[in-house]
Each structure stands twice: as C-alpha cells, then as structure tokens.
Length: 337
Image (cartoon, rainbow, N blue to C red):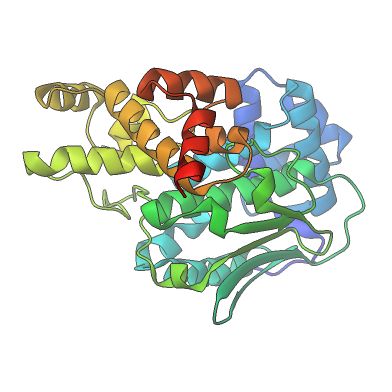
C-alpha cells in the first residue's frame, strides 16, 4: 500500500538514480545531502520522503559540482531509453501512446504527491501536463530538464517515424539544462505555470507505442529482432532512425534493443554487406534530406535533429554524403517550389 504525503514532498527513488550517476563520475554526494538537509538514508530507501525543494537544490548542486549543465537531462534520457521502473506497467499494458499516457498519469499519481499529472484531449491537439502542487521560488533548471528529457525522448523512441518534433510544443520554465538535440528553440515556449507541458497532434494518441523496454520476464515493449534474414536490416534501420538524434546511441545500445550480443549484431550486419556505422550514415543522410525539405528553421536545428553537434558538423557531413552543401540543397528546393 502506498502512503500519501504532504504536497511539498517527493520520494527518494529519482534522487537515488541521479546520486548513483553523480558518484560514478567521481562526485561526493554526502556533502550535497548535508547541505540540503537530506538524510543519508534517502540513498537506500526509494519510498523515503524528501522535501521537494531540497531535492531540486541537490540536483542543481550535482550539475554544478560536475560542471555539466546537462547532467540530469542525460540521466533522464538514458532512463527513457532503458526503462523507468515507475512506468513499466504502463508501458507493458500500452498498445498506443494514449494507453501509455493514461497509464502514466495513474501510476505517477499513486507515487508522487508534489506534482500532478494530467492528460487533456481536444479535436486537434493533446496536452500532457505536469504541475507542481506548491509554488517553488528556487531554481529548478535541472528538475525541469529531467521531465523534458525523459518524456520527449520516450515519445521519440516509442512513436518511431510518427514522431515529428515540428508538430510538438514544449512548455516549461526553461530549457537551459536540456541538450539542444532533445529540444530545439522552435519547439519551446517559456511558461511559469507548469513544470512541463507537451502539446502534440491528437492523432498521435492512436499511434502504436513501443519504446523497446526490456522487462523482468524477458519480454520487451517492442518487437525483438526478426529471425527472418530479409527483415533484419529493416528492423535495425528502424531502431537507428528512432534514436538518430541521440548522439550517445552506439552499437552496444543498438544490440541491447535487438536483444542480441554486440558481436553477433556485427556479424549479422557484416553478412549483409554493411555495418552499424554505414547504416547510421545512410539513415542520417536520409533524415537530413527530409528535414531540409520541410524545415525552414536554422541549420543548427536540423543538425541536432539529425544527431550532429552543430551547423558546421552538419555541413561537413552533408557535403561529404551528398556532394552538395546543405544550404545549397535547401535553396535549390525553394527555387523548385
């Protein structure tokens, strides 16, 4: 039975995930806990109540200590890719994005009291929203980044080709702690009223949702790699496409999604006359060309969506892959239109 708490508290589970990653990078967590009045027991008791403001401050302290403003967002992104225990039941039962979000609202409302989750639907748009139950006056850059990075990554991964960042609007206090390959400036609206609000087309709610999480019974929320050799490349290509914006996505992570070993995946791709690097380059080139055709924003935004670090890297990649600079390609398309 889950006990209810005062709205100013949150549970220690998320703090434990962040603290573990912080210590793995050489950080000393004890001084941060002491400075913010958080007992050491919070590191071993997931359901222990932690004062929400203290948790937010600890997140800021960890990012500052590491000199990495994207620290919490990167941990959240990894959790979205590998699976988050609180939402595993919601994912396991979901056949569509709508199923998942309804389940997510129910699961999180049972476990967290300092925030309220809601899902509102209209004819044209759906709004998934997280509101804090009390006014917070201190900085919440890292806490905001956790929610944004987690849910945007989860939607991108679970929806696959249905996901289109140009059809999503993200509202939050700021995206200062969010890597630009997760949320670009044209997707963001500043809001002081909510911790996070995601607005997207209502038709996404009916789309199949399969983030690929692996469960304790060995089952996944997405199909495993097919045994039919003719379908292997299609499956691998789709997995790469769904994760192309994540620059940390590598061969090991692809193998995990395929539920096979790294070496077996390498041998399988080699038998098809290709490799992870070659397939990723081909997928990135295809996505970049699609984005240039329909995205009129800055080239740096196109670069981030294609999984590259910035406009210069994107220019070099596109010139090498197609023999034409991206700006010239875009101008040619506009002229043709």
